Length: 248
Image 1 (tube, rainbow, N blue to C red):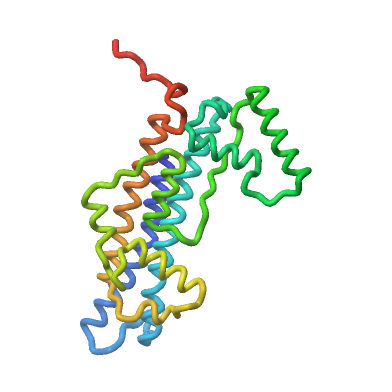
Image 2: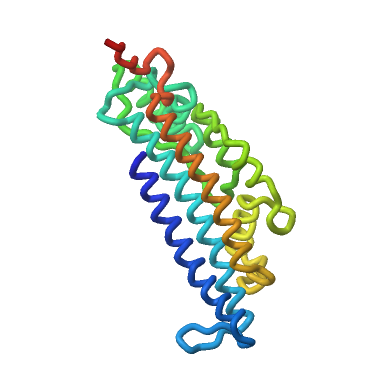
């Protein structure tokens, strides 16, 4: 999970570097009556709006990447070294293993479905270890509700601090909290229902920084929750979890 935290902070750094550029452009605009410029090229209002809208895409990229990395870390822990068998997994991960091994959520012809079911039965009869585990991540709609649904599916109870919970629920624009706002603008931009210029219209660097700070604060707590989940072996059933060494 150290790798996840480092990757998260690196990706967040990209967003902050970009916001620093926008902040400098804002400062230039405040000092002079002219529109801001880059390399001597004056920006139009439309171009400004386009630049601002990119932050929503960056933040959604950060959200989806972070959740994906966290779920991949759980998968790696459960399959590490072929140490655990399907019966050792917690109920949520055992269901994910069955979904993957028996292809329960895939359209198959009867012969293929029988083949996958037989392979799963052979695995269980021979008491083979879990060599590979893929947790379905989904895509395109990550916000607080979707993250909570994913954590509940694997038996991780996501408990946010009161401060972070309050901040992600407070509306920041269009009567939406930061996570829902980022998801909605990302989807609307991706599907063409809003232009980049329209998305960035009437937005300031301060507004975007506020959304970034609240999104980052939330994701840091998500990463920490996954770190504890893995460190405490909560991806295993209670009986299969290694016991901590007794104090001397």
